[in-house]
Length: 172
Image: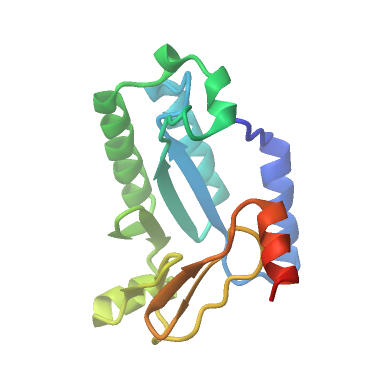
């Protein structure tokens, strides 16, 4: 789908982030990718569990070649079926939960000591335009092309195409 990340790159980025003092490491995994099989998915999950990121998000790949040009080059017959994708989600849930992650809702798993797990237990977990949060309502400013923000419960989205976004800035 146009995203290539080697194991070494992901390991290095996570290591540098931890060494630099980042509070949390959040990795997003995609289910339903071309040529993704249950065996390959299990290997990915086992590797993620070994890395022990604080948070893991699961996203479902959506094949939309009519609106996403890079997807036109992909062989749709190489995509897992809907049933296979659901089974991979169930596998992820089982493996992550058995490794000490809590499912906090929708697509998110967090380690048991995470502030989001604690907020869920206290009934204070909420979802904003980006993800789950343990903080009270606050302005969320999205900066840059394609950014999303939330102010006073109103959502806004910046132009996603860089030239249009730049033009919007020039026009004030």
